[in-house]
Length: 141
Length: 332
Image (cartoon, rainbow over all chains, first blue to last red; front, side, top):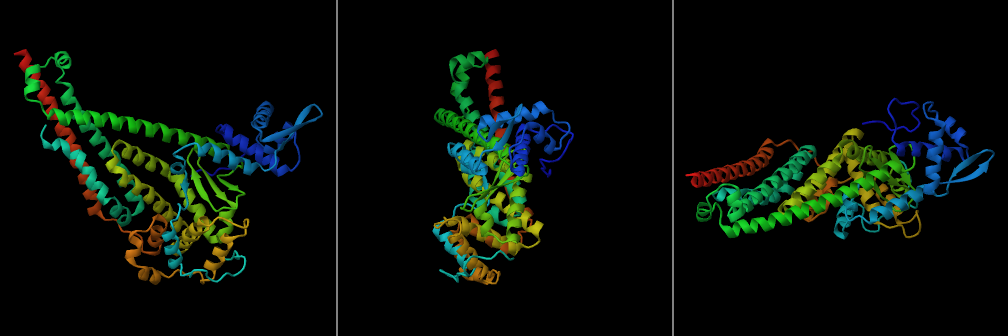
């Protein structure tokens, strides 16, 4: 199983466009401030990546509506549009919702439960109906 | 062609009847390979005999007989299979081909779309966390696949259980499990009698990931807890924002000293399990010892596939021999 690390610098093989986009987005999110292409390229830490490539990726993301840009000297400075993971989720939900095979394509951790299944699970866990509510659940374990 | 030609149409019934039994009695990796492989082989077999039967009707068309240099009178007098059966087979073949093609097209499009989104999801890593209060987690197919988990799901699980969840989803991604489910799905489209096998494969694929996750985390009872808790969390829609019933469920389950009572499972009994859905069965399977490899079961399914395959070959051979005979008659 390959370890996916977008910040892996100069990894011999060509990275997929989507992976580069993801890496650029990660850099911009981490920066917390609008960045011009030069700064983005620096922070990507991939020496083999050309400046023009970075500019192309940034403009593509801007065209997709994922980034917004403002003039900063000669170049643009790019920043992620707010609520970006939510955007991704909504986009995916709306596109996949059109597919009748949507459910089948995702390997869900747990499938939908029927009422009787819910009951059965609770019995298996020996938590009676209503149970003992201990306030907000703690995260120890 | 004698009655043997109809065997590959009947064998899928036997396989379908045994699918659920196999899914629970064999180690899930073996079961997945066996069921998916058998589904594909049996679907190929049944489609092939439909083709052979239809062909035996087609050669009775005068134009075709002429093109094939066959004696038309002989073909029509000694037709290898009853004409009505052959025509029915032709109709079925057309229906089945259309269904399988449509299924392949739709599933292919859904997979490509999901893979595209898997690549374009933000973040550098395999895991993507979505700030959604509802508990959900799934793996998107692709090269590489991505794992999507909602914040609600992470909230509902304890840290050790989150590790189980991630190990389970990684097992799906690494094992390319969607290939097995797609193969079985297409086989069932080509032969609807095989639908129970396709359903069984979607179940065994989850069991496979469960067992891998349990092995990675070294604790099957923990894995069982994680599955149960995740299921209950996802069944509850947060009514009052993120810190609603999902948290209550987590708190309730936490308060049972973290132990699962398999005795309670005994009391719940096999009767309750009979009609149970996949999630309780997965939890029960994780609480029980892992299924042993049972060579007899594997051999039984392999035998069914073999019977189907041999029948197809026999039917093809006898049709071929018949055509040659008809050609010899014309020549003489």
